[in-house]
Image (cartoon, rainbow, N blue to C red; front, side, top):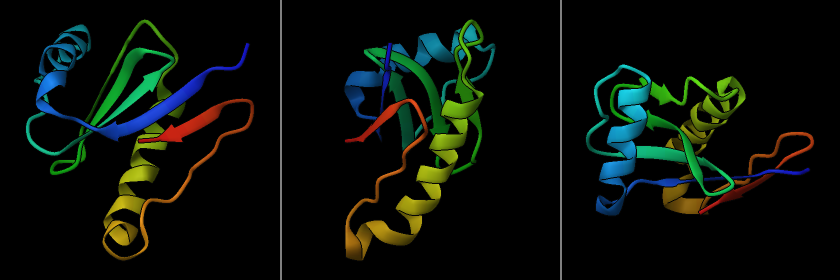
Length: 98
C-alpha cells in the first residue's frame, strides 16, 4: 500500500495534536513556526523551524519523515519568497506539500 506524506506549516488548529506528539516523544512542544508531516491523516513528525529540533512518533518509522521535514525546511528557506514551494519525493511514497 502506498502512503501519502503531507508536509505543511502548523496553524493554531494543530496545537493539541502537536502537544500529543511531543508528549509521545517525551519532548517539549515546538512553538512558533513549525513544519508538520502527516502520513495519511496521522501527524508523525514536526520540525521547529527556529531551533531545528524535531519531535516524532516513537511508535512509527519516522527517520525518513524527519529527513523530509529537514529537506523541506531547507527548500522553504531558500525558495518560498520568490519561486514558490518545491516538491520533494521519496521512492514508493507520494509526497504532497501543502
